[in-house]
Length: 203
Image (cartoon, rainbow, N blue to C red; front, top):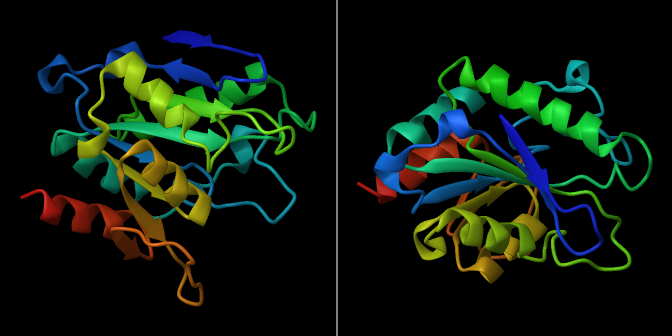
């Protein structure tokens, strides 16, 4: 397993998992996932997941990622994690948490290829914190991704905005009482439901 990333104010950090590389698909099509609220339960406003014991996977997530991989997509996570800037956890602790997350999902056949995260505060603005598309653009450079054939799935409007700015198609996960102010290609109430709609569109 390889760690790499920039720790200055202009680049996000990334973790790549070599054992999940698939040359068969040449990393051309990717489904980018936000983390909190998409993969795991989102903590209450102002709180952060800082330990693996606090990470609760949402129902159907492993199945959804497994279906994506079986359909020929690589799966990458792009996540704002300003808990680092707030001093609630270190970069090393965040990467250990992401290692655990990926290993747990991989044990169910749900392989995540890379994790990109922005550890910065909202201000001053950086190029990687969503809704900026920096994490997706960096992933595209590093993995030769066709962004126009890729998707960004998130549970916030800023996820959709980041995906659109990068040239991806987008999907927004909504709870039943929620409204979105942005236009996405797909709206649904869970990652599994979104995945089924995306794969149906790619048949």
